Length: 140
Image 1 (cartoon, helix red, strand yellow):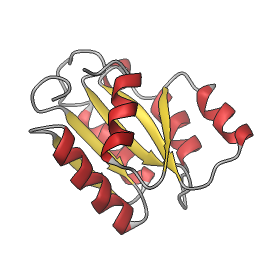
Image 2 (image 1 turned 180 degrees about the vertical axis):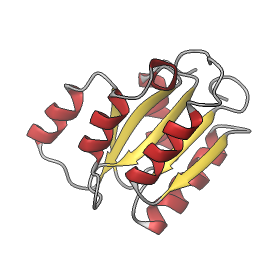
Image 3 (image 1 turned 30 degrees about the vertical axis):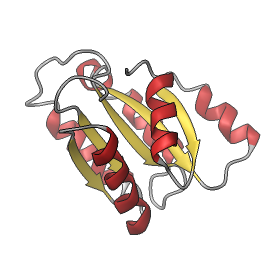
Image 4 (image 1 turned 30 degrees about the horizontal axis):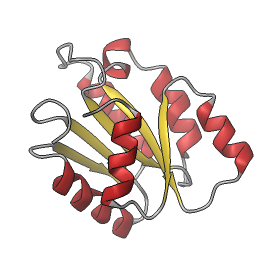
């Protein structure tokens, strides 16, 4: 098992199948996780802004976010930019990972240039892929 008990996990993807798959993988690997799913980055950002009003400081990086890169309205790059503007208590509560079936080297470099970005894995997400991301981010 990774992290503290009941880690908060946010899953963001406009593809219902990918969202369901990611949820099942997280449930397998991260016991007792508090999973919230969002079909848009805008909805996830609204949730995070509202959470700021009730959150108590958590252990840094205790939870994580898995987000698709290519989404309508607000894509993964824009999500990272908006996430970076959230209060520090929120930013410190989550590691942000990006998923995508297609990404070019310039886009990957752009992701790694964002201070809020913690890792990338190509879709489809697998148990092994999530293990890799969590290990890269220091979850054990």
